[in-house]
Length: 51
Image 1 (spheres, one colour):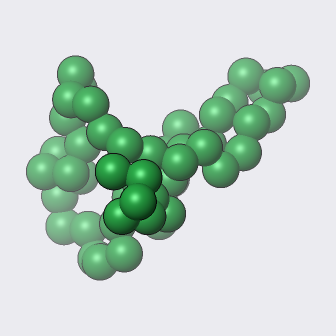
Image 2 (tube, rainbow, N blue to C red; image 1 turned 180 degrees about the vertical axis):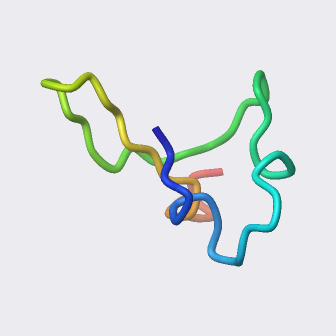
């Protein structure tokens, strides 16, 4: 799951322009909750070295 605040450092006007189904994106795993089966991801925290 990606929270809205973790998508971009700028104000988001349209989520559809940032994220599309089937497109590969580089993200960082922030937290793993095994009990609920959630993986929290962040596109905002990706450093230039990760790309």
